Image 1 (cartoon, rainbow, N blue to C red):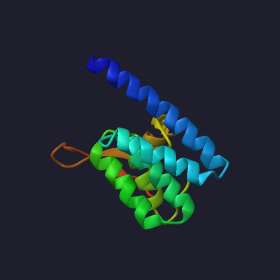
Image 2 (image 1 turned 135 degrees about the vertical axis):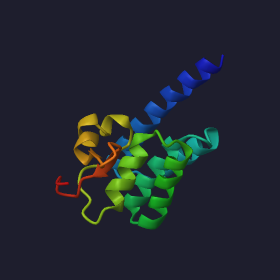
Image 3 (image 1 turned 90 degrees about the horizontal axis):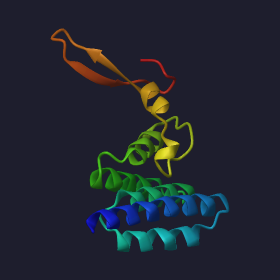
Length: 136
């Protein structure tokens, strides 16, 4: 039974992300906010609505509050890649690329291009982030 709830909620998140993306493109911010806040009420521990609210707030020009929601999404689920992607994108002085509404906006190629592993003198690997221009 729990498995069905998880599948149902995942399907709802796919639809939510798709709908919010479409509304954002049409600048229907009020409708976006209503969808997102309803999802927050239904799924208070899910990162998706916080990530989407962060994107909405960025589009409305409220950078500080947007970053708080990206961090909230990241705190709720550290494996949720769109939150990390948006934190990196909007936290950079030279933001490039589009917002990540869902995982499809975060290709593994993009992730590989942003980071590399460097080994220290003890053979321990450390993840190093590339700078804005793709150099290390």
